[in-house]
Length: 207
Image (cartoon, rainbow, N blue to C red; front, side, top):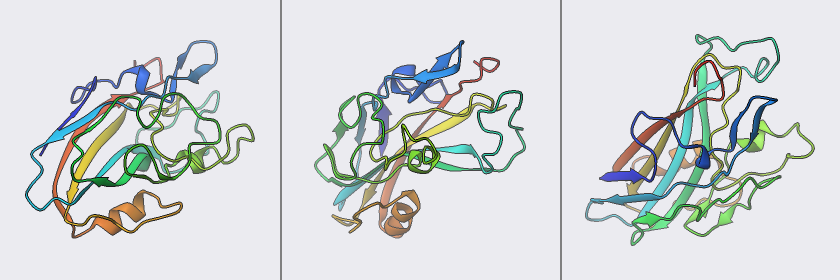
């Protein structure tokens, strides 16, 4: 399969219009436009019955103690974990394109609803955990919410946009399912996959 992500070139910075957070010289970060990029794909194999769309950051600090803390820097050698930004399952086999802004157009404080969305069924992204301690933002975040890496991280983060063709019409996931649940459910059902990867940072020294 071949995947194209509108405005995102392989190995190049993700445009700010797709970001949850953008650089602000006064207080490090401001909310961004948070639009989902257009996703379009071709070459799905015969027997495809649905698609999974996901985007994740594999470079998130495994320990959050120093995240966005003045006077501290997150070291490059800190172990990293996956942070899911977008999960769509049960995307119909006839779908070949998700338009820009279809699943997200702006930051939604306390999150967008999970379950059936504009395209497929929305899973829960990891802003649900990351913002749990913020009374103005805490909630259940589903669908697309874009990049917003720690502004004091010493590495540039990568963002993997993926589409997976499956041999089942539904993964039978409901409620607040997360990225690990999606990966577990689709194991053994993936006929083909495609990926486009971009980068993003809020650290002015790395921009």
